[in-house]
Image (cartoon, rainbow, N blue to C red; front, side, top):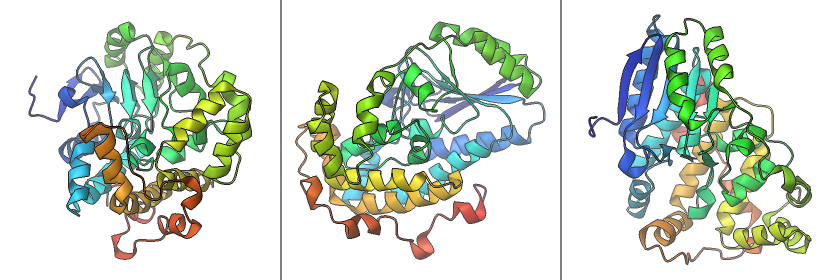
Length: 356
């Protein structure tokens, strides 16, 4: 295995395999890997001999832990723009995956977070295992869910998506299926057999049959039993009111969640709540990604992002100093600014498509 190649590409039978190849950083996405994935998908789309693609991660820990947070942090500290260029290509890749005309089979085995959700949950065949831990954990570092994550979570039942977006909580296979982030559960030990079966699939219908034949019942997850307090508390109009409802609710898990939210960036939470609410409107993924780019650009420039990464990843003191420090101090005008058009800096996916 070549450690210098960000994405390994090979073909078995009718299937093109794309393997993220940065296992030492849990296959975190950098600009090179995003570009390589985009080029590989374009080639697979043109190749009539390829029936489907399989996307997986090298190493035993998972598909992808998200973007390269340290690189983004270092860029933000010096007021750079490399991260904005990275997001432009990453979001275009997310849209390409969503529109890919052949079965896009994502093995969401192990850790699948942030950008890892973007390269998997927008696909047409999304497979989780008993090892899957799926999350959009951006609020933990003073950032906001992107890569179309709020578009996905806004379509989860009730207020489950709002809960996951705000808390950044990771979920297993059953809850990923419940929330619409995955389609099938396959035992991790059966993935090699599924891979072999897919190699012989000549049509999309063959792919669907092969996946179904290897799928197993995921059972019931943790969120089913939490629907009552989640739906009751997260319908509130503001983060401050959500926290109040959680604190006043009788469920111990609700009170624990209130404490989780109080430790996170008030600005990131307020913007995330607004992003999820806006994402509920009927619109395309491309429109949602255009919104994500506006929000990411503004969040990248806010001091909470650098501070959040410092506290959680760099210094690891887990004592961030948010600005402002409390939910009630975030003004509506500040939140609205995140969603304002960028002028000439717009991503413009809705107008141009992912190939522009």
